[in-house]
Image (tube, rainbow, N blue to C red; front, side, top):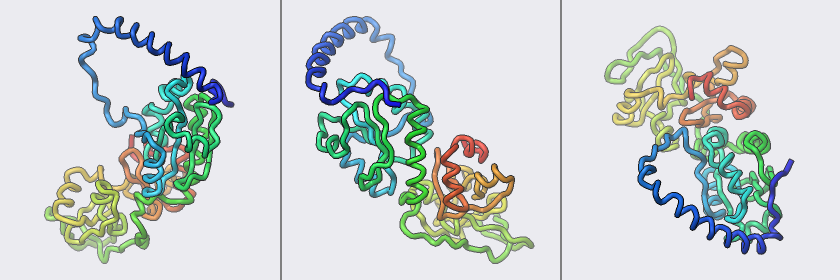
Length: 315
């Protein structure tokens, strides 16, 4: 249900009144806080997990990035004079909770209706705030009108984002066409101190189909690893692209390796079975890499990412 909205037809009169009120409020605020400035000198730097979404300020720039990365756009139409807009930004849009739900799945942009009237008209925005999920080409997938609480906002937007990502895997992870057929180790290998492998009796699995986990994590690029720079984690051996990548991987393999040794966390949690995921359905969530066996499993992860990430040892 749409609540607490401001119609654009009322914009002119409201802006005149609001401008005068804001000028008066600004003077009063300055007078009241001046004696307290010294006591507010120390600020606590927020950690990554405490930050909200990164919002672009112009639609064209955000759309260009969405096309490059293959992600849907989350668009928030607002104005400087719109009280409900500011409330919604404070309660929903700029919160760490929304970052956790949508952070690396959308390209977010706040469209000022006064500065971008053509974009406002294009999407037929009549009430503020209005929020949309649209494809990189501008096709509307979901819409909310008026102030929305956090739960209602996520319930309206997340399914649309999930459906799009399942149908159109992000380019940031695909990096173009990649080989989805896994590389099979000829024999069981056990890494030595130099990162090379020695023979054994049972076969082990090659992680990420032979692509470097460090390059994927650090650069979001699929780069082939080299067998001479190998490192084993549990029952999975990973190939790195260089000696420096191997050193980085050894220092903290859990940072770079896929969660749950590359097994599908959704299938594991729902069925109790460990099934190796495919790089075709790879996805980063909250700094961790997850592999899924198919699009359906990936979609289920999006329906409750916090629950599944926790089960895989994530945050």
